[in-house]
Image (cartoon, rainbow over all chains, first blue to last red; front, top):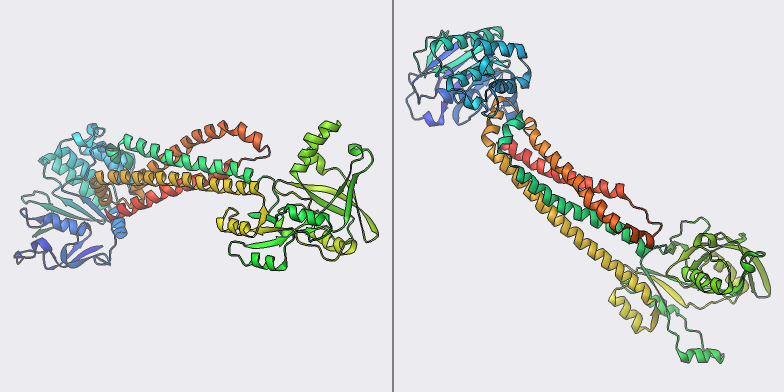
Amino acid sequence: MHIHLQQIIPFPLQDMNHEKSAIWGRDFSFKSGKTYGIFAPSGMGKTSLISILYGLRNDFHGSFFIGKDSSDTLKTTDWMNLRRRQLSLCPQGLWLFDDLSALENIQLKNSLTHHKTEKEIQNMLQHAGMAEHQHKKAGILSYGQKQRIAIIRALSQTFHFILLDEAFSHLDKENKHKMWELIRTEAAQQSAGIILTSLGGETLHSDISISL
Amino acid sequence: MIWKILKSEFKQWQLIGVITVMLLGFSIILLAARFYTDIRPMFRGSDLWQHEHIIISKKISQQNTASQLLGKGEKPSFSDKEIKALEAQPFIKSLAVFTSSSFEASAHTDGNLLGGFYTELFFESVPSKYIDLKDENWTWSSDSEFIPIILPKSYLNIYNFGFATSQNLPQITEKAASSIPFRIQIRGNRKIKNYKARIVGFSDRLNTILVPQEFLDYANPKYGPKEVPVSRIVLLTPDPSDPELLNYIESNQYDYNKEQLNNGKARMLLNTATAIVIITGLIISALALWLFILSSQLLLQRNRHKIEKLKALGFNTSQIIKPFVRISLIVTTAVFLLSLIPYFLVSAAYRSALQALLPEATVHHSLILLIGFVFIITLSGFNLLIIRKKLSRI
């Protein structure tokens, strides 16, 4: 599956110069199976791009296609289905529920499609070094711990693309690599594409580097 | 799990408030409906008239009694013109004249029953469509040897409490009286004919002995003079206590049964009182619904960000609305079950009094409760509909 962008410029960025941008105002295709690293300093629209691709905002010029569906025709219910089975997101704000435990946050997402078994979830928690914290309320975890939980949650569904918005910002090198391994394995299993944003300086391997 | 996410913003006192107010409104409606269905038969009683009606007759003055005694002057009766004028009145739906028997008649019991009871009597009739008697016997054809009779209840009372007591005869119930076979003999135009007869019903409001119209239509010309004057008329009217109607009756010097009118007034009063109580109950219920909607909206607003997150994770409206459905169900069930307490307590409190007045009264619990249940389900359904609409907009 492809995500094909056609001349997209978010309204807040329309007055800026996008000559050097590979995305804004241009045609661009994300192909599943590939890893895309989007590197840019803040304010260049990394989160805007992720939000647009995930259907969270529509204040932009141009349009894009997810598979054969145009962004102009997708309705709320279509987006619900896309978010359940085709697009996975680890948002910058993490969107964990503080009243639920770390494990419950993952189970909540997994309950939509039952993609992972309890055992698989436990294995991922183990791998991320979060097994002993899984019953703690998400609200009391450190930000780095929360990021790991949010990543595991994003992996608990089928997807053609996984969107990671500065998902490693609070992880040390070791944890970053552990999480990256989890993501790559899952994406490879599903032949899915990875789109990740970062402030730059990532040591992670990506097939294609894009600047905004 | 969605409930677990939303419940931290949930305030129990709000739920208790909603339940209390809704319970108040709902109990009032239930009790009013119950009371109304209990009391209503008292005004209808065992009466056999189909519709609201009033019976009028001509006033009898000393003067025309005197002239009748002297063999001069007519009996007071309604002329065709008067009947036409009555029919033309807007407050009269329809009318029927009473036909009186124009022959001699007597009744006696067979053998020793009631000590060989014998009496002279008379008959009257109105078209059978005016009479609400579900008795297949209430017909008569020219080859029939049997005459069904409707008697005023007061006649039975006179017998039971006056005659039977003083003459040392057995007192009899309505049912027993209905099972006594009579023989009726009619005489006139030098002919005599015997019939079997039985009482098929008692009327509270009617001071006459009724037989089927067909019988008098057949027997009057055969055993009596051709024309019988009309002395009483029944008027069907939506409201027998309508002042316009009463003025008309007074101004034409007709006579009517004032006690019956009181009954009509009491029924009107009952209807009005019930309506006021039910409307009060409905207003309180509407306020309760409003409160319910408001507190649901509040819960929705407080959880707005969480709901946004849930939607972003791929949860749809029907999944997110589940906790609200649950709250609605709890409120509905609680209100419904709690309302049964005042319902049964209050109805038990006046039950013995009611049974003394209306021994045959049956209570339609299931119907009232079913209606109540539908009502309350509608309320919570309405609330959920609004929540759903709001949810889909977040």
